[in-house]
Length: 307
Length: 322
Image (tube, rainbow over all chains, first blue to last red; front, side, top):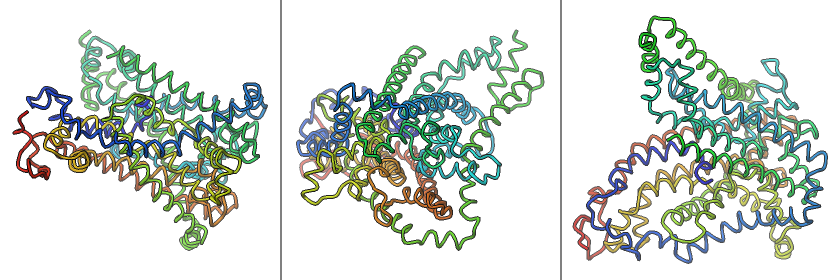
């Protein structure tokens, strides 16, 4: 889970940094005396900073105050009234409508992402056109842009008084559009490095055996990209399920129509229905983790299978 | 068979080299179609809307933008956002480096669990983060009574916003530092240790210089996220104008008050900061790319000043005998 959760844009950097650093240090088997004795220098080993009781304690306190206690409180609140009350809270008609919209919209968005993300990654790696580097850099814009600004940006072009004559405000299309915007980089950034490293000789061999470009893509390229696409999908889905900022302005948050799960939770908090908010939160969290876990496992298995 | 194969392979190989023959022409057309679809999608979803926001902001002239940007509440929101960043980012940086060291260099049980915990903020909806904080630090929360009797306000006030900001931007530094630490290996650190360096010396003179670009990259990501956080902060802030409205919250506030110039202006400020972040990310990635070879402390590293220790002051690692 830790690997794909890593910001995909980071992979490129880490990989790039690694290529250089890997040389002298991790090349394995240099004739250096201390290489033979891994246990050497235990007292001065860096681990001892992180491992010092004080350091560990402070890290633990920070993590607890910030993350662990709040999550524990959330779980406690959600399970407070037992399974009956949990069920009651997540099965109110408004909650069901919100959850359904969230999951369906996320599924559609993720499917579109898989297609367009792969396409964009392909164009960025295999195609040449002027301005390619700028386009490549702009892919990360939705990561850098605050979510509320993402909403405003979409409103500026597709809202009231749109120069295109399209007004999607307060529709489900708006929800989908906002989700597409904020999840755009995930698939692109996970497919791009794999495509870059892909050995072209396989494709050339297939082509020389008479396979057309489409066949080569379908039979050779796509299976190699599948793990990366899957992990991009997983990240997109987890993000889409919890998205709030980009949706809140453009969707109008109409219950039963454009209200997504996170907005429903927000409204429950405002109404001081904390048990309801907590129950739906836990359910959304479980959905995200389930998809993330499943696809990460699948992706790992495929990549082992292919390589 | 080989006659029809030739155009294909040249097509794959040399991209746009003009090659007569129907298959090559068809492949070229397909390539163009793919490019147009991909770039068109990006233009419609990303570029045109972002360009449009700049147009919308300035359509009523510079004067309107200036007065919107200098409105007291706007200025307050800006400085509050800076304050949140100034507290949350250093905390998360120290935490991130510490956890990265712990995960990569320490030996203890529950490592996988800790790694999972660090990633949690990526998987949790910002709204849920806000709710979780309310459940602990809110009026009816676990610590609600205790905090109230001691007169400490967390929720609906700045400390809560700091917590929310720190929560959502927690993983970046650790996640950027861990792979660099892993690549670095422990050889140079062990060498320093054998030369008598204390663990702090080793960290400062060997490890930190080697991981610095990873850390800086993480800091940039943390800052961007902290500056733009909306959902989690919106739950815990209470949205008191001129008091607990950070810049992203101010954007929403202006929108809901039908002050579109105010909203667009604040949004453009945030967008410009995001573009600066993007630029920084790209420059750093290039820099790290270039620097990683040269700046990695090599065991024989002549570039690195020897560790100050009277006994081994002049001993290069290669001369160490064990």
